[in-house]
Length: 177
Image (cartoon, rainbow, N blue to C red; front, side, top):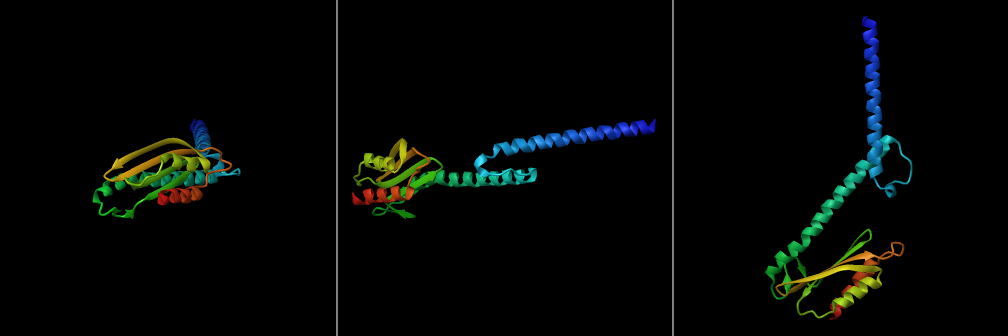
């Protein structure tokens, strides 16, 4: 009687272990399917897929931290604008021109003095000429500063967006006026 219990117990453990391995393999494939295909070009073993998923998650975490810092920047600019002395701000001087590009999204941030006369339509024209379509443009005034934020979408991913050239053209426009 003992040998039949032992053999059934071994069979049960084997079945449980087999189900566990099948479940783990399924979970590994599910995790690997969440990693974008452009992240890896070749077929990988399960441990390599897990390593790749780990690297991808770390990369996403770093991107989140960078985006949080960028998100907090405009708040910092508004807070420091209270400390204006003869047109100079603590930490940076005006005008501030930034062109940020991430995948097919382009964000242009301009901080200028209120007395700076340039047309926003000229800024939009430069962005569109460099290969992006403006999706949203907004501005706000604080003290004697004007904050412009323009969100754009790259129109042709093949051609791309020349952010360095756009930045130079924007500097030329803002400093010229």
